[in-house]
Length: 396
Image (tube, rainbow, N blue to C red; front, side):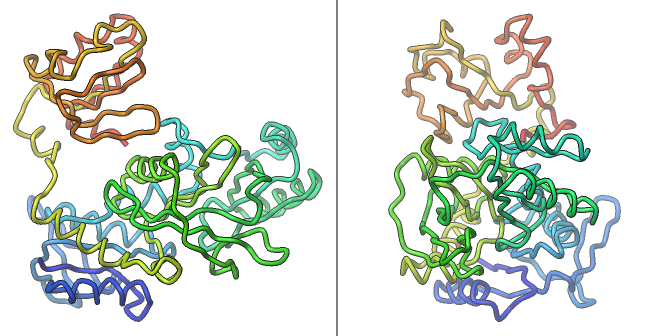
């Protein structure tokens, strides 16, 4: 495997460890400065130049895109995708995770636990918004910020109102978020690679600091996560469209609540406190994907007219409840089940002998007419956008 690591910091701990892990496993690896690429576009031939020379062939790309170069960095990643190079994280996934409001909107839609959050622009809406999230104290966050920068705790409603007004006067977009008192000063970072959590740590703030980020002086300790936290972390990363991610969660009374999904998680803190080879896990995952790539649904769509991707919901009372996937007869109707969503669980490529339950949701690929017939007439009119063709693109 020939691997490119996109990074503007070749001497940073994370980049060095990923490069070392690849070399230790016998792979060819280069660290390429993201800002040194030129993107060439012409009909049918997407191409990249690096330092004024045509880029050689690579099997895979591992993006380490800093927040300050998100636009250009994701453009470079997108070009690699158009050139059919495997990207550990896609441009779409990176963009989803960088915008805190967008990421919370996506997670909320998929029933992932998040702190109650509101986003307002009008000064008159600030006080009602604070009340809706439970009143002071509240957390105020800049929509774009990393390592705890742009995260403030307002102890009173008046303080919150003043902070929001000040930030908005500086043309900053801010979120107002419920303060989860029981997790004050600590959170969980789960490092997700593919469909599993490879390492996890609890970060604890020191002194009067409420932010637990290691960059803010927080102390990290290894932790064995309960199943609910592991499932939530993996599902959140997958929903964002990320294969490699750091998922930050609060330990609330109601269970895990996602604060942020990071597309370029640092390795130093988590490797130091867990003594695990996280970099090695990332490299091994990428190598496995290059050797045994996943089915590219979009590629099948380009040669299969009349086929698409759709979600099929199984309500209480459905004839499918209690049947195995095989017994539903979906295969005979030219419908393949790609993923089963059950509560917080994400089950890719479910076995045909798995018994379906009320509330299950199936992500399917198949003949669109067959899938449309499975949706009741009223629901079909209401949910028509759920059936996606190549033109409308895959689900987020």
